[in-house]
Image (cartoon, helix red, strand yellow):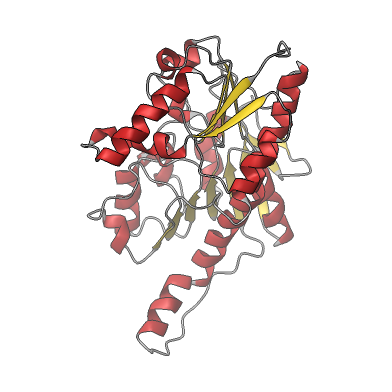
Length: 343
């Protein structure tokens, strides 16, 4: 439970929101002073290079705003947040994971932290299925042939009856599993909580424990990476896991780039040990211009936009408002960070 506040509260919003959405937050309670800190947050993030005078002024104002902030709502926290925001009571991250907090003092602090797990699951699942369909239909080849005005037929891959292996059966993985079943695919999945292989449920035909990841991958025609990034999952798809896949298999990653050994993936794609990959996330973002992934003909690159849609901002604000009401009423907040599991 959280203690319900009785005095004025400053809500610092680091996301650049339309005025109507910011006013929607302010309308929750007259005790709220909702401040747009988006310019300051961007200036703070840009401190790795020399700032121009406008950015310097924005950063100075941002530091003043942090000093009186009670609630912080943004995609991610600035550096040294605890020292810069002494009044802070609650941080809400408009993100589906908390990997940006790994190794920071925030996880070891008593600060109340929540995040937007599951809020954008529908659109990320749609993006994942889109990448799967694009790989199976040869979408990249079709576009390239159209650009060259070439009429060349080729054989597409049918998904009906194929096996989708979902690494991480959470909000997003579960939605993709249901969509794949609707496309008449067989679905198998890995759950962190599983200790042994079990018969399926309403989502998957078979559930595997993490200890049997390679056995699961060996059955896959398509692999979806949808697990959170934690110390346990970092690099979980390495050379041996990729070697377990069929050479005809596709890999789709809409989770975090660090879950996959990127060089091992490049080597497998280049050598023809993997048919193709649809990637929305990468080890380094933006993806460096000299990355071989750009030019591989069996790769579809998406610039980390699976969760970015025409309704993303409104979804984030609506979820935050729901939690904000709970906070003001002293009730338990949704999606509190489990520090022992890193999500």
